[in-house]
Image 1 (cartoon, rainbow, N blue to C red):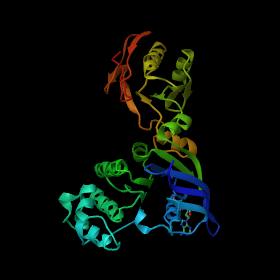
Image 2: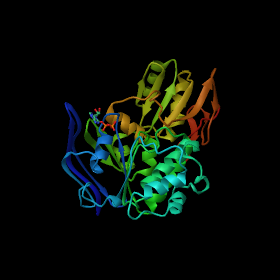
Image 3: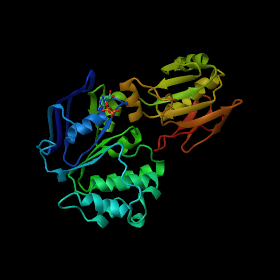
Image 4: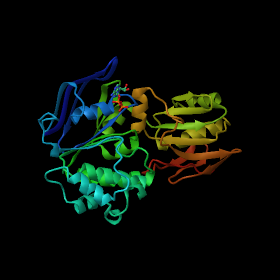
Amino acid sequence: MNEAVVAADVRKQYGETVALDGVDLSVADGEVFGLIGPNGAGKTTLVRALTGTTAVDGEVSVHGETPTGIDADRIGLLPQSFAPPARLTARELVDYYGGLYDSARDTDDILATVGLENDADSWYETLSGGQQRRVCVGIALVNNPDVLFLDEPTTGIDPAGRRSLWSVLEGLAEGGTTIFLTSHSMAEVERLADRVGLLQDGRLVAVGSPAELIDSHGGGSRLVIETDDSSAAADALAAEGFEATAEPTTVVIAGVSPVDIGDAVAALSAADVGYESLTWTEPSLEDVYLQLTGETFEGAATPGGSVVAEQTAGDASATQAGTVSQDSAGSQDSTAPQDGTAQEGAR
Ligand code: ADP
């Protein structure tokens, strides 16, 4: 493998604060590497170390050279907070920053790459958040870098702007640019990154493809049942062989596949236990993050989940695509749709 970025035993301390505590990492040429981790984990410090904007102990190299020794044209950096002059147009900004390099990429070419051809002559301050960030990515591309470092490129951008920036980054990756990205958006990293590293307290605690990390640390798929009668529900489910854990207002069944949903519903029905909703979830990178950092998100019981059935006054109402239908207690016909959603037929 051709290594674009290498860090070996990288350490950085600010007074008493250990920001990086022996980071070893390598990113292959053409790879998209996503760095995740809680605030204060050391992500920005690592980006700064890899781009030569802060001195660290240990070894850091980009295409075999030190970040400060390598030709500046080969590295592009979009820092976390970068605010170019607001009363310049997108075109003027790309032109201006291009002028700082001996040989810069063609401005129109860059504007097309980041999808700003039609807004090229608008002032930066009049562009949407997503368009502004695309201008910033364009500025980071003026020197035609081999490796692009993006520190939280989509923070603060609305979902539409975020997705349009993802398309831009996917286009760059397809063109062979190595991308090193930090993000708090697990969806972003899961979509864009070939490999992901989780940094915690200055240490890389897990590295792998999203699928590998989810496999190792995501836990299995699970069914979350919202009910006021969680202990009775858990007993009824356990009697049918489900691994059910009762929480105050929910019961969680671990390692359950969509085809088992009907059995779970039948068990509740047979025991005459009511429920408000059933939500089946597959593990995601968010679960990996929660598992490894020990953090919790609000509503973490159902991250990325799909409500598969809601029940009111003893009557279940189907809500989403896919089917898990039940003819009568104990006899059900289930199919698992591709998108991970399923629904229970009225009973
Ligand atoms: P992240 O980007 O993951 O939020 P940072 O790299 O910004 O983390 O920070 C890692 C740790 O180093 C934090 O405890 C932060 O307060 C500290 N730190 C970062 N930069 C400085 C600095 N210039 N001076 C002092 N402490 C710093």
